[in-house]
Amino acid sequence: MCTIPKLTKNSNIIVIDDEVEITDFTEIILTDLGFEKISSFTSIKEFTESTVIYSADIIFIDINLKGINGLILLAWVKAKRPSAAVIIFSGDTRVELIKEAKHLGAISFLSKLALDKNIRELFNKWHVNYPLV
Image (cartoon, rainbow, N blue to C red):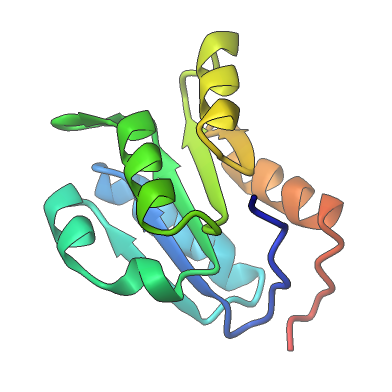
């Protein structure tokens, strides 16, 4: 079972999306919020071959990835590290995708539309205190 992680400026955050513009934008949002340790991957192979999963506090995964469905990657992450806090984010917000992501263990599902607002609202819901320390 995944619990909401206690977040600080040193929390390790991973962003996985095959579009560099999205990883860059997400990094900007997270940096603006005060996070300092953000790793981004546009290559699923590079992510799955790395060991960053074991130190991650939060992992953002897009659903529509080249060569693999993000929900499959979510299942892989949860198999490797059941306690991982995974947030699925996508422009595709069909109810069945949201339900499947939650069923597979995602802690949240965010729409990429208004991503900045959606990330801030989620962290506020988790009572993340700013400025981060």
